Image 1 (tube, one colour):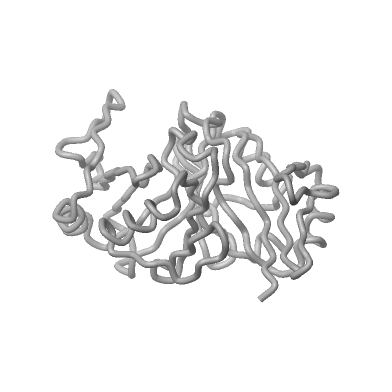
Image 2 (cartoon, helix red, strand yellow; image 1 turned 90 degrees about the vertical axis):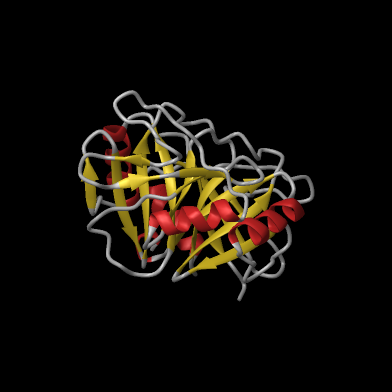
Length: 254
């Protein structure tokens, strides 16, 4: 089931070679696996993918969070490698020298990769001092609607909630956030992926709960009944949540 499977961020890129070079040069990361048109990165016990698409650059919201044990040290290291941190003014809160600090001492910083993807680096005082990890950030125009949809359609309830700001969910051994932003719905690409065995059975189960699966025509390949499969046994299916985020279920042959 989807609730037992890990979910990981899926970042759209226009130029996979350029993105690979940027992530190596600026972040010091190398892909662990390289399926066609995709790069898979492992960060601690978490993972994310870069995939090439003509829809890269459409997302105007934060697409991934990268949690680090020491935010200031991480910022200094990244700036030394040429990473430029964004400055934001949200009215009550704003960044100062690239860092937004909240009254309780928590902080956040943001930067963009070579493809324009916005990556956040949140830090909390009560964050367990574990290793680094990444997580998907899903944009929502209406958090109440999103919370109800995830409960009704995916049987997921938040494990933490900041009213009107963010919902945090656990899925398998991973976590992801659904957060309120005026930029919800801008991403036209897949933003997060669940990988597990038994995707066809899960598609049937979710359909029974009212989830509508998308049909796509990729030229040589196209979905049939909402499912894309190949001779090697790979299976993919896509659906949208209540906020327009495109989410994928993937079953790899290996």
